[in-house]
Length: 397
Image (cartoon, rainbow, N blue to C red; front, side, top):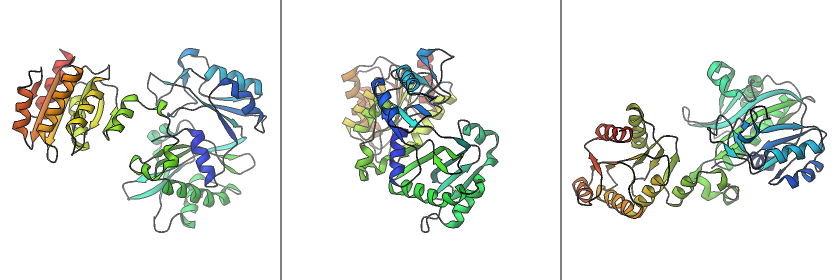
């Protein structure tokens, strides 16, 4: 689960991290009062969407010469003017895709005199099985280019969970970021604050980009991106309250109600598979034969007929889907249950696109018999390779 920047900063402030004063607003009428509550005279007006690259983003409705999704304002009138222009319009960034995201809230923040922009994040490093800091002197909007072109400028510091952030760990971060006093003296405290927030709140990502050194030499968290481990959210009702459903795909929201692992993608072949590994393989083989998957969908090992029906409905609700591939290997999951769910869903919502089903494993013959006797226009496949070729041919033909 993702949250907005202003929510992330408020959370980090609770752990003692240095962040600027700011006010979140949802209407242009709130902009003047928000700006007046801040010290000024420099203000930053930030679009609040669940996507990075906001500063370089472009608003669909405003033309190519308009400013991006993060703007500086030197007067309160400029804050108000920017708020009126940004709210309700669609911001397109590298991470939103061409459709963009509508800006429904802004964060009006006190400005800062920036001396240096740095990069600092926390994530789970699976290569060492520990939470790790990732640090770079090349902070700001082009960190992705740094990772691709000059990866040696990015330093990883894994943290021993039994010891937490030690003085030696903090010294590595100070060296990696090239910090001098007073920022160097502040880094051990900041690193421990961020690590505590990450571990106590079960985060999967905590990204500060940029972490700035101000003209006075002190550190400040200028931007914050936070994602949480969805499997641990039951332990954090306070975090659940921060969820903004308007930022999530409606199909993914519906899937979460049935405990389905669903991610919307940009292709046109809907996939329903059991098991994450098999789902990834199914997506790969669709691409191998020249098409693109419309989703990742893992119904899990113990799906019921109702769950399968719900999954099928979610797939067919996507207008981009021009064909559907059901690929089930029945271990714990029974093929006859999958077949019953598919038939029930098709009878309820109809079938307007080609459907190819590959079943293998537990009760496979019963499952195939259910499909064959359904009277529905369903194409059977012998194996995954056969299934992928058939659905790609049907969609293209």
